[in-house]
Length: 320
Image (cartoon, rainbow, N blue to C red; front, top):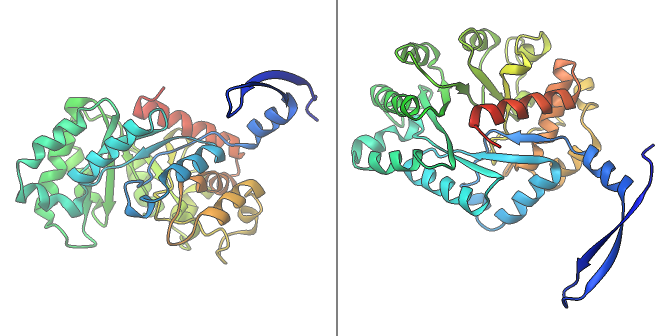
């Protein structure tokens, strides 16, 4: 049991008068140790679903233990908005600048917008380039257009020395072929990974990082993300975690989620998850629950996973 000591602090009330407050040190320490210290490597806080209460969303994330949040840009417009948020909420929000494969055609249609994109990418608060890559599941942009804009972003990332966030769906070999064209690539992160363990190995063999989300609640295959964690294929020094909010809600009540994983989630994490997050709108405050699930699959402690993934994020994105 923590030793209970009392310290005296001075506070100022609403009328400006000083008040003496006694704070129980043991309670303060207990509160600190209740929280996992985690970093969200991807939360889409530029989404209109947060337009009315973003302050509360960020405060809940901080209360839950989320120290920093990467807000990705997926177009010129959203990259600019992500940069704006990083300036409104310094030291917790950091932005990335990316042209998502679906939006690749927008650069072709308006070539001058690339100049604006480069300016955003050069900003100090912008800590990575992407998500960029290839997505062959949908045809919002033609594959050749996707490849062209993907290569432009990789060249930009190489010149700036900023990490690259890769979005890949049903296009792994083409992504790998393009990445191999660049000799001096900065660190590569495969974000929101949803592939097979075999596909993950191809990335890990190249020393890429893999970022996981609440998708592991949905993965019911014998060859996917769960196997990657169960058999120790994914080492902690290659792992990042993200909520991908408002998407990828971690459904901890999923019937196929193993019992030892469900019981590995603390009441505190479930409180934030079930009170503030839904299938329609996930929030960064769900990240501790995701970390605890990953830890249970990996047969490690949540603190181990939290510490390792936070360290990886700090290193890759150059955060202080």
